[in-house]
Image (cartoon, rainbow, N blue to C red; front, top):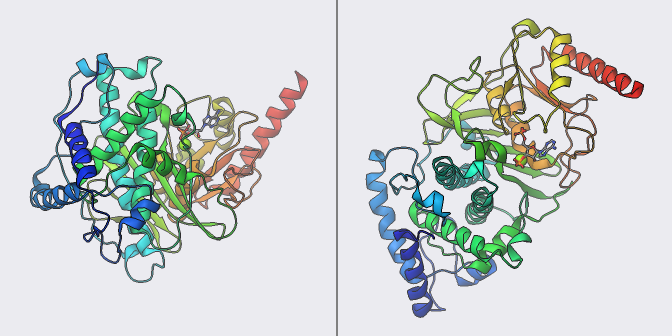
Length: 461
Ligand SMILES: Nc1ncnc2c1ncn2[C@@H]1O[C@H](COP(=O)(O)O)[C@@H](OP(=O)(O)O)[C@H]1O
Ligand SMILES: [Mg+2]
């Protein structure tokens, strides 16, 4: 048994009317300033524009803009079709709103050669975060995470990727290439029809609820938008790098996750944004992932040479942040993966011991760790996957620039910079470590000693 929400029905009705009344000569005239889109462009993007939807979205945008200040955060959408148990669970009332009008920071104005890309990236991850929040709320309320059914997170993963891709195509200047985690292969298989329909509904409802764009995705458009993320990246040209939901395990638990987007330009990461919907805006130091502050939902952003900023996902003014200045490991704390399958907790514990770190590890999911480190919530991040695991560029691209622009250092356990120019994978066979410039020399020494001891112990077995 499924729930078809009123918004879903509206979108379907509009689709039908739109198909009937679709006029090939219709020009779309109210897209963001500086862009002119017509139906040829829509066809290239795998999208359909509908005159009826255009009209309804533009009038609702004005109404939403007027009422925005009074709306609570976070917004929710009645979204994907849910299982019977999920449908029986309590639901929050949906509220509509436009994306926040963000205050321009110094990084988005004079002197930033990537100012337009930065604004587009922030908008993209903020919209994707809305979709993810709505799905996570349903997962947490319904208890889906305790069952084998992982479809809600799948829907959110794909939905987030589609929305980021859409906003970048609409708003970011230059050619478009996206290296992203998801592709449409599974969705094209027999038996995936329902989930594809759910994604289509969720994405369309999110777009209508937001009101920034007058666009409707067909199912085929959804599949082709997902496959926009198939780029291989590499050392030349510009490529966006996206993890639509980083920290999937945390997402399912109701814990931390991030929407992580970066721009690779001629083999170097030049811009990164991290939307962390569950990360407190105030420091989480010494609180093991939680905070006493009320406001939750942080958006970190960094552009090469311009520093790192944080603002609330609900658009407080951006503030410059920097890593902590601790120079004695005794005062340091360290972040690592919540999941022991993602990083060897026994190895990190021996590194911390060697270094003289007294505090217990702070274990949280996703690149939220990089953001928290960048604002000085902790001093060190240690990540040591088990043998054979290959790191993907989208798991570190945004986080690494957020950290380095805040004054931090990210290297592999051999002391080399991370190289994002080799395609979809990072070319590493050790771990990844990050800290400030004071602690890095002693941290690297402790890491290399601990690895050597681990290897010696393994060779004796
Ligand atoms: N066996 C493994 N070892 C190391 N990392 C892994 C892993 N399996 C998955 N991951 C990666 O670890 C990421 C989460 O990192 P963290 O532990 O810091 O939360 C996952 O991102 P996704 O959740 O996007 O798949 C995934 O890319
Ligand atoms: Mg990831």
